[in-house]
Image (cartoon, rainbow, N blue to C red; front, side):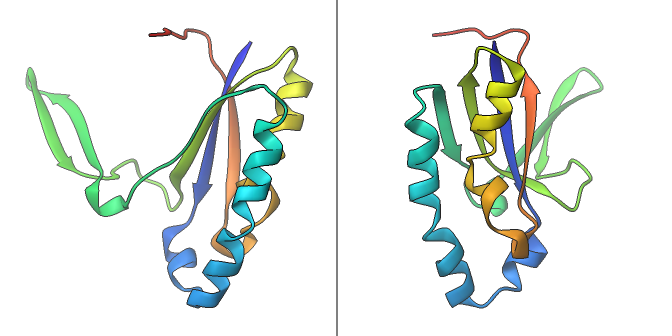
Length: 123
């Protein structure tokens, strides 16, 4: 079964950190990402771009409306995502727990949400 992992953070908390704190946190990510990839179960792993460039598209009055984003009401936003193929839910949880957002970044309020994927269209 495939699972989507969403890595969240709270922009205000992360922005309040001193640059050296951010550097110390972020410098730990590559090794944790590599540990996760070494399982052979990670199919996609990505960090998302600047929030300033996000756009939200919604159907309104029969037309697609584009607004600045993120506009999903939440103090936390998605900063990264990954897709894993696991043989069980427990295995998916074990692999997701390796993600940097589940290991470090408490100061930035990082978290991982793991969601089973019911439909997946491969290219």
